[in-house]
Image (cartoon, rainbow, N blue to C red):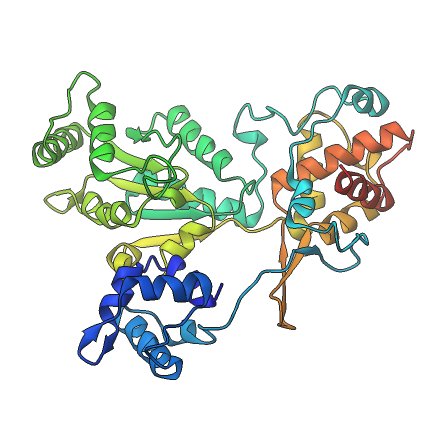
Length: 410
């Protein structure tokens, strides 16, 4: 597979779009030709490759692609497996697959033996959220939390982006809890996103009419949404205006927003611009994984108007806040974490929750951290279970390493 396919997918450029913009002797290229090039690196015999390549690049530029994305666009691209960074546990290269690395992220709970061995009254990582005091707040998380509350209270459009397990859903629950506890006059609208995908082939896509229905039902559960798109939009706008006149504010929250199709993302601008005089009627918070950042790229011309109105905040890895995070979690169940963990354990957690990604044929490597709350929870739970099994009095760096080896051989 050549890099062209990855770039087209990233910026939602269709094969028919690209083919239409490639001019060759006064005619466009067949989409079938483009299909063979991007999927199989097979080039037509009737056109010299040296002639076709610059025409494809020109077409991509016309479609809004920045020059930096055209570098090595026709190079064959194959991802190698990701491996643990730094002094990672040596693993047989034949077994070192992406799946074995991401075993680190599979759900683990502290078992009964570990609870008895360390006198842990309950698992601090499972069903542990009862109120906002249970939410760990680093400076980064505190900023994202504040941005969400400000958007809910004062309006705007915000995208909260983070890896799986970074705490996005926790912050959503925290926001709703804050609204309820403080009796904020905010109506929260959350369209159901079960099975949400960005196209109908993979699953159900969320359309603007679905969002309109969710708004209508949230404001007036007894109202029946109109059948036509125009009538439904007018019904929704009227309900929003009447509700705003009574002093209510409205917040649309879309979780799993990375699964939104591009047309729906584009339509969000129209929802955001619903007004009564100068007063905006709807604030919007999108919550999604890193694919959402790609869809909201400033280089994607299809969503330019949304990008210009949307603030993006990212949930970063814990990294050197891991010890502070663990201290907080165990303090919530009234345990001094230092009775459970040696300082070396935290160094190893940081080192082990890093991956190095590289491309075949390239010497360039990129280190990225997987040190998010869910991964830390799972790794620590596994280490406590292992320590109990070998009757260790405390979790050390060596036990963290052995835990990863143990999980890699599952």
